[in-house]
Amino acid sequence: MHYFPDAVTSRGKKHLETLAKVKEQGMRAVMLYIIQRTDVNIFAPAKEIDPEYAKALKIAYEKGVEIIPLQVKVSPEKIEISKELPFELLFK
Image (cartoon, rainbow, N blue to C red; front, side, top):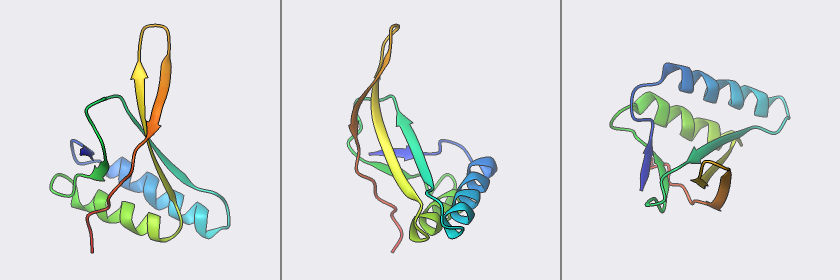
């Protein structure tokens, strides 16, 4: 499992809140995570590190913001999408 963020991110929380407002206005809103690690099978918010970000992600998702965690392979020549990972929000 890959957790994000690895530090408190008030800026990231603000982005999620903005995406939720965009979605409420009837537009498509997507939170795209680019994961460069290949040892990851699932994406989840790091609620122990930044519970406010985790909560904002759940609220944004409930409002219709799409969450797309993409695993990529990086080389000097290119960044190649490997696969879309499942995600878990970890809140009941």
